[in-house]
Image 1: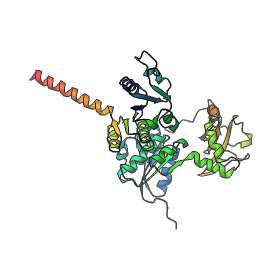
Image 2: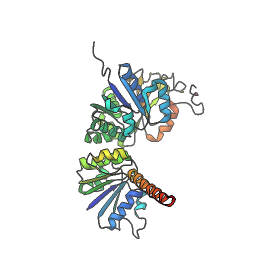
Image 3: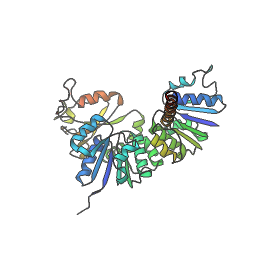
Length: 149
Length: 237
């Protein structure tokens, strides 16, 4: 399947590499041409030789999305560093291009929850961090209670 | 007597820039209850001196900021920040999540209009479009289409406030040495806009729009603003 990833930072680029390695077709879009280098971290070949696609542009530019292959994408991932951008472009992918699965990374837990009810699949790193921290603290507390009790 | 627009409604104005602040003033004068939300601390403190409790500090992209400002009982939300994504999403949640009946969004970049349409945020107001319409009406030989093309060719329109101490105050337009590649296209004075003529004399407080090559923006703002080194008078304590 074709996965289009907009926002090629640490998160976007890692996911892109992993999906390409698992045999999917992957196209990345980022406004910063330099972010291409991040895709090649740990690869022996260039991103293109490995089978990936990279386009420079923003997710608000319809031309850039088209060049990146949005019209035949099965999955759209919005993973820029801005919540607002991710929410807007995810909705463009969904409503304008009818992409089947649209995933948006939204840091704000409250908004992640709300947009999840609006047809987007949302991933909230803040929520994950909160849960992990709480879990770790509970483990520490349990251990402490065990040793002192 | 004609009914005033609004009249006793609760309205949220998001963004306390020139547009938002002046809009809030007008709406308050017309008898509405208004809250402005501004995310820049400095700007917020400035506005607070005049509007007092009617301005809130916070990022209106965050839902709790909107809720604290009372979005649930707002009859209208007007998003006029300088960021199109903010304006778009604030209006979208206002309508879809909080059931606000009327929203108005400002579009800063006319290319983003299509996204406002797509997400159902209407009506939207684009200053660039309004100005282009004004130009088209006043100076018909500059067609609307032609000017829209210019935007792609690296030309921008900027909005500047003429300060009390600006070197251009009190001088006729044809006496000015405007940087090459720039043109004053409109003057807003006391709430009325007009297209300047060679004998127009600039006054302090005029809001001017200039069309220019983006590379000379600093030169132009320097020329129309304060002279280098003179500095802004210190704000009143």
